[in-house]
Image (cartoon, rainbow, N blue to C red; front, top):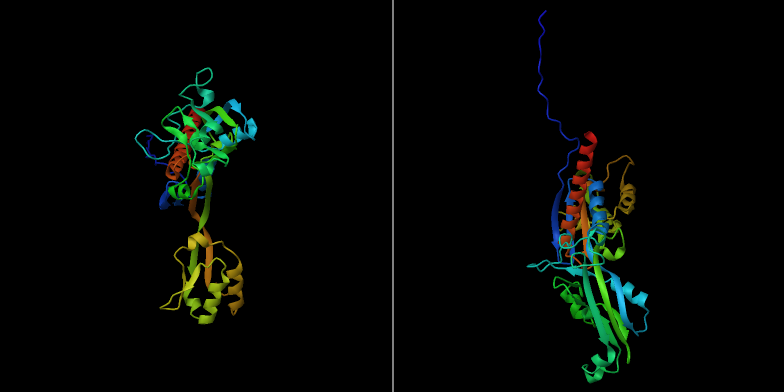
Length: 337
């Protein structure tokens, strides 16, 4: 008997449900960014959101050494306020608050005994009311002296407190920076503050964002054929029944249309559904308007504390996510061996 060997070409395996997420920027400012994440699901959206909140590394004051404190606030209270100051790292040759993970090491991973420029930044603060009061205008000498973030002197020219989010906030502020404590006659404050790199998972003072949230993109489907059976009064009633005002009447055709910024206002309430059901001749008739949340398109809104630019927070979060995936892939390969 002749045995025939048949060789079959191996087909390349395709990843099931392989996705290629995309990001579309809607608006961007130094302290705020709004973008659309599409062609993915809630697992990816929530992973990015949680990383921006808890795993993007920043600098924050972690240790305070007091030389003198005769203010009305005790040492622990002032240390807590100093810890919440956003510390901004600006890479050399840049104007934006960036990711500090390449410039500093976590304190626990540094080989130094106590601290060094590789793992920490020192700030000095020395304010004496009586000395400063001599240089103040006559009309201000009877007022308390506000010690602000401007009084913190850094030993690293690339690192400084973020005094304001933007120029508008700076113009409206009454102080020169973030208020720490007020001093009166005979009072002074002298200390040394040590800033270290960390993540918000360890303590909230390292959180780079004040707001990091997303909402589902609304899919608004208008049944034009069914709407032809409605009077103008009924169409207007549907417009007014929706509390988030995502519908309007076209001035030319009189048809129901979705407003341009419906994605910002859609809350998926039941009011529109109730109003439609009352207008139907039969309960089984199709809806005039359907508003459903998309399962693969999300609108993100991120506002920073000032420690980093909003765009840099997003880039850093994607870097952390990529590093985590690479680490997971490497560990899986080890299991195979």
